[in-house]
Image (cartoon, rainbow, N blue to C red):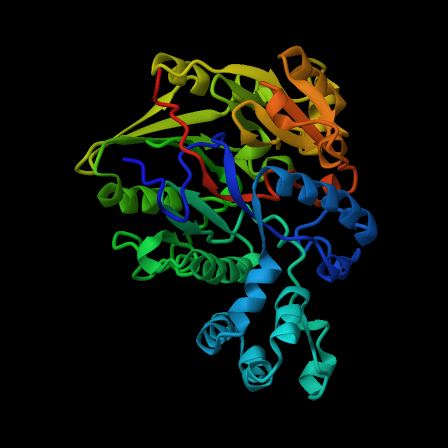
Length: 434
């Protein structure tokens, strides 16, 4: 059943976008150096001025088609509330070093604390141990924060906080949990899966043992329909997380549902499912062909869950064929087109990582020219975002549209537009209507 009156609601990847959470990159990006890049999950150093210039075009376009909510704006409001402030400080002060600085954090102005929570809290170097420490920060900056997709997800009228695979990103899910609860007046009862409590798994889901670490990130979580999820098992998302989500869904759904799992290689270019498989229209998907239908096809698992929670789990030969046999025929559009070399290059540059803001209307990087040509061949009109921002074009005038933003520097961050957007509300879209 759909609950479109809920402040959060997602039942597809392509329903018309109504509200999205974003974060404009700031000074936290400049903590990335050749020495810290790997630790902070980057392969390259990003010039902040160039990144902000490219991101501003995405921001301005999204503001045309939906309500945009900036992480920093909500966080500032949160920190004005004494209870919320202490909840955030307590959740992030997990090390002995930070615990010793709680009083210092507690008396800061909201603006200063907000800056520190995003851009880092420097080591004071006031003890011999801290002086000898190679760490510059007691609390590390969050240069991955602008990938808002990973730290939270929405399915139907419930939200999920990510259980981040790497500790440098754990604060993001803690912040996003509080931001979503504040912005949409939700409580823990609205949580389908709380990744902030899932890392150790102790007491979270009864059948999981404390030594089992479960992780789940939003790049692996695709909402196909109100009763079908497609989840990547990757270096960032584990099978235990899928088990937990399914267990928690049973009493919420009150009906049968299905989960497809895609077993991804644990490689840099396939950190998340949306880097190789992305739903862009009711009858179209953007795919990295070698892994989805080609010579290096991945393993796919289908899990059917009945109303009482019983499961039928089996391997299927083809994800697209299985969906077609179920009444959902999807035509593939190939990331990088038909050229093997261009496929590899553009998949690396997040060419598969477009974001749908309406059925058949998507936005992604302009540097992936072969992918854009493939979309054009599939009937999509290719236009730069600036044409809509200036008022010269209107998205409503096109049935199939691929909007482009400059992305040469943003792509170096390892993600695309889907990574940088957390949709919290879309209009109901009936993928079930066959």
